[in-house]
Length: 438
Ligand code: NAD
Image (tube, rainbow, N blue to C red):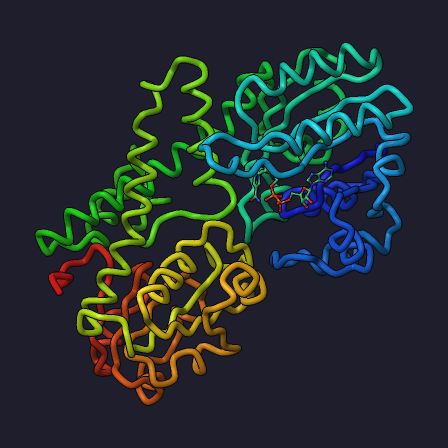
């Protein structure tokens, strides 16, 4: 099938390449000319494992093209995927859907044949219905569907080609059939799919993110209590996780969630509930958000305490800038947030990340950045492990002991082997595991 993809960020670029991999002819458009230039040249503008390889393979087939002309992308396509950003609106908790509105308008203005416009962006419930009505007013040959995206950065290709499930928010058999045709290979391979009305399909995505955020904040709330009574949240979490009704995933206590999705999505969901007169139903998400942000404050206060009660004159290595490992995404990154807070309070902060340094520099240019973890840690008074990259989990504590000024580590992600580090002479502090009355 001939598809267009509007918006080639983390979601859209991967979606476009994966659809071409499945055999479709895809033309993708973005308003950001530098992204289009990089993608056309076979270079990913962001880090995603396996994406560079996939991109060159599908570009070589001729089935994938990137263009700066929306008309070229849209013309002749049977299905248009809208993958543009929905960031938090400045000065509000709500989502900014201006990019979605203009992407839909651009498709309608440039479509030259009948087709389906499929929203993949995460939007406030009610957006799809409104857009469907607007599109119906201006074009008789175009219809709107919603197909929420559940991919995780770091596993985006796998999640696109082998998703847990597909959700089709549709209002006609034609729309359902078109989506079945797009995803025929996955459906033939047994991927479960559900059809839903438009509002349900929008809600599936925000409800999933609200649930995941709540699970993370739940265990981090337990971590707060563990810290007071010197209990160990990692043991608590393992013990809870064996209960099949609870499950162990998303139950690792640490520095909490960040990134371009969970924080803004739970805020936008709450804001939308308020508009719909359902504030009470989602009031708990405000607590989920607050618990999450308190972990960042706790990490900063533990760091300050263990270096002697004041940051001034102290050198602190922060390992990790991305909001999670295997990504270069620093949007609302807990690691960078903690690094910046310590820097503001006077610390000399030395940051390393295997992939996210350029993005981090663009957001926080005044922090110190280093090309290797060793360089960042040289003469440090404290190492803060802030993003759980394998590279950091596998650090040899003996080797690093020789680099630092004082062998002190704050493991905010509960990932290192505490005994091995302690045996190597390190003072180890971990969020949620007691011993933090410093
Ligand atoms: P992103 O910021 O990486 O990419 C958005 C892209 O849209 C940018 O490249 C921007 O230039 C482009 N854009 C904006 N307006 C445009 C327009 N009118 N026409 C064409 N391009 C336009 O964002 P993202 O992370 O890819 O997220 C996109 C959407 O997908 C969001 O709603 C997000 O919540 C959702 N989502 C993201 C993920 C993820 O892991 N990143 C997962 C699921 C859902």
